[in-house]
Amino acid sequence: MIFHVQPFNPGSKLFSWAFWILCGALGCLWIALIRQFSVEWSINPQYGYGWAVPFLCVFLIWQKIQKSEVRSQKSEIRPLTSVLRPPSSVPYLLLFAFCAALWLPARLVQVANPQWRSAAWFTALVVIGLTFCALGLLQPTKGVETSRVAPSLSSRLVFPVCFFLVAVPWPTVVERPLIQFLTRANVAVTIEILGWLGIPALQHGNIIELGNGLVGIDEACSGIRSFQATLMLSLFFGAFFRLRAAHRGLLCLAGFGFSFLFNVARTTLLSVVSARKGTGALASWHDPAGVTVLVACFTIIWLVAGLWSRAQPRGPTRETVATPEAGVETRFGFCSPYCQRAGVWVSVWIMTVFVGVEVWFRMHEWNQPANQRWTVALPTNDDTYEEIPFSETVKQQLRFSEAKNGRWRSEDGACWQAVFLRWSPGRIAAHLAQGHTPETCLPASGRKLLSMSPIKTIEVHGLRLPFREYILEEAGQTIHVFYCLWQDRADKQMFESVDLLAVRSRLSGIWTGRRNLGQRSLELVVRELKDDVAVQDAVRRQLQKIVVIEQ
Image (cartoon, rainbow, N blue to C red; front, side):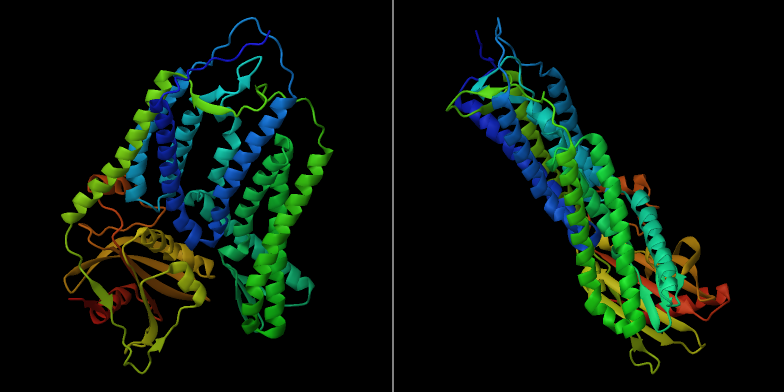
């Protein structure tokens, strides 16, 4: 004799509304999370694949549910002698309340520090935790006939939901050393191959010096883009073909190896083209070679996963034993009235946090000081002045609202270069302004970083501009770089780089109700001045000339 599982299913209008209210709240959570990461996916080519990850997550969820239904229809139904009850929902309720409480600090930190990657991971884990808890409170309420309680939705969808984490930007402390390692390894191997081909080449950081010019290898060319995209593809195909855990790990390692080899081949090809046809020919070869690398990685991982899937023995499945009645659609509902009430109250709390956080920051923005607007007027009338245009790649990456870049010589014979960038208020400004600092960009261009000073305040026309001085070596010559990052409408200007920014200063923006209201950066480079004291005085004089207060 076979009995039905009897979960709580009042069938009232309140119950159906509670279910859809919870679904709507979770949808808002995921939309906010995707919107936060969309900035990084748009401006950072390393994470451009992130746009595909949400759709792949939906596909894996659909595949998991479909295969579970097929397996359940083939499973054997055993007779029972009593009515089964659903599993205890108390752990899910407790975890649900805990994750809901964490949503408030997560949202506050997310709005105040959209560029903080550790906070991004915290927010993503909170949203995933709330999703799992909500799925754990649901179970089949109609069309289920079984010999034991079917697994919860949360246990079935662990991997498809957690797969979204591959699109979360890696913490800087992990990503930056990896970028530098892959870039230098790529360049070093390319130098060896060029030597075998009879093409003389020298390595200067991320730059390959050839007989007729320089070939720059940025992060996107170093293998980091395909490295992270390969990790995503390996995990996806491992789940798609239902590979065992050991095979999935081997697939990731194989993907990393292939991505590095293909990027070495790409860098070698670009170097050979530059050596034979000149650096001007790189523009027509750069992007096609990059697309070829991604397509090759995709194809190989797909083929390897497919071959391992065919060779993998198929044993009996133990995943699910639930079977739907013929002609009856399976529906899901809450396990108990307590779960139903918890779902409604957590949904209300989630939406309250959305509204409350926005009100909190807007109230403080009304009382923030007026913006001290300033810009840079470069000496365009000087005979030695030379304007340096930005490449289309730099414009696409930085997405600034205003930019000036020029080089000139002063009366004392020193060579100067000033780069001024301004970003209008918005989430994208904080990502770009604080993500492209001299300690990140200059060493990658072949210069050696010798020292980095604490923040120095230089007063210019009543403005107290915070500068950090970098001393670098370039082709045996010492150059000084003074970098200033200015936060618009800030009570106190005290910028730090992404790595050095203390947790306390990041969290202070929450209490003061400050979020991104725009940034300006000024980078002043001086060459051919060896006396440090003379450099300091010369920089102050140049700032008095080029910095202009806007009315």
